[in-house]
Length: 407
Image (cartoon, rainbow, N blue to C red; front, side, top):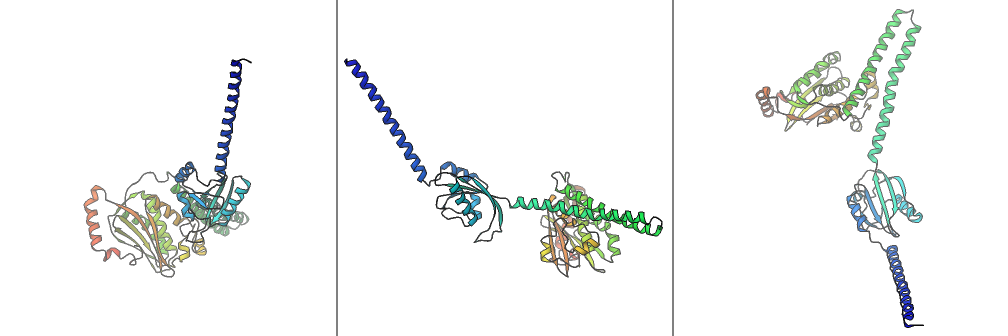
């Protein structure tokens, strides 16, 4: 064997040994990395960055169930770093995912063992993040559930309310056919059909008004609106109804006041409050409509001396189709949509509706809207009225409402 051949064989053997050593080193490093990953509880920096930017509640837990990292929203559910999960259902979800290794999503209601949070409906998803880590994301779907329930209730209530007059019209039509040879009975049934048709038209009209107010383009054009004209139109529309019920309607407060909005919608809102006051007021009582400038807002208060509203009902009176007094409302043809229309109409104008009421003493509904300067041609008279109203706040300008009930 020549010297050159020996050198080549030695080079080949050295190369093979070098490759083997590199492979052994690479395997050792990979094994070490796997062992570190399998035993490490350090949260990757990328995961921390994601948690920092999340709107939903989320957390990372180790094998013992200890919380290692959280998003900002998680603290509102009582999930904090260094603690364990308070909720037993969440802990069970973590154990299930850790044993199966499969991501799992469950819906549940979360309550705090400490603190005053209301039960929240959530969708919780747990996933394996590493050999020792579990990632849990908790999405609050309470509001979505509420909206779905409102939608279902609206469809059910609308169907029920429409079914009553439609059914009545059908029965009365059959009665007319049976009494075709009795003109007196036909006239009676025809009058009742007319009343049911009016009720049906009122209900469908109010449903359309409510839908228009809730639509994104429900209120398009706003202009300066005279509150004097809004109040006058509302009172005039109910003058006959109030007179037939032996009720006195009065108007007081500041004059020459303007707001920015849709005059027709504002008249409908104030009219609904006056109509409610008439329905729930005893004969011979007084209903007052007052206007007051308070700082940069305008308050339009409708006060009555009626039966009042209980505290429980006050929390729900602005819901669609809700009636505080079911029997009286149906007897007077109420749809249960009036106050809901008022609320949405005023909200679309950037305002709010406040309620004061005591059972047996009456109620005061107050519409609060942003105040604006009067148009240029009425500016001098407007300013004079405003100054006099504020100067004489304890005099005739507040005669229309009981003190302190609408502020």
